[in-house]
Length: 111
Image 1 (tube, rainbow, N blue to C red):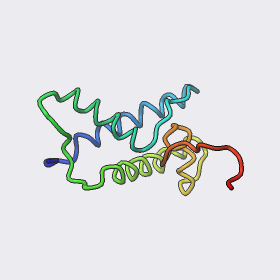
Image 2: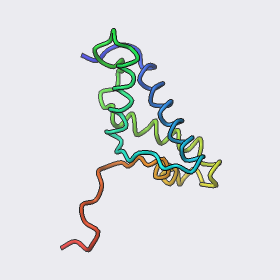
Image 3: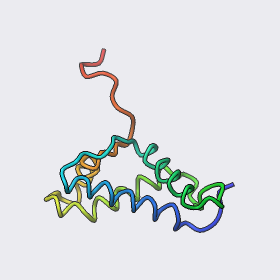
Image 4: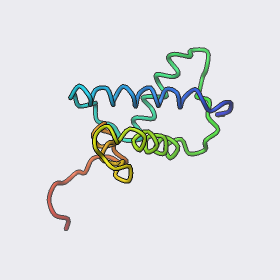
């Protein structure tokens, strides 16, 4: 059961977002990830840093949606640096190589 405070995992999410932003600043492309992959990367790093815990501390019933909201907020706060309007925050999300769903399986027309 997931119970407790909400700060631990989200601190790790923010740290990983900052690391990805630093890679973009030095013109390196971060590793590709979906929101779900990114959440699990943050979760695994958090649990490795806190071996006494068996699961993450979050009250969110939908952690992927909460992760997407954190990514959106982070991108809106940092998009000015890349001359991106806040309403186009998803362009910064693409720069840090995090995508809302999996990759497309085809490049052509549907049908």
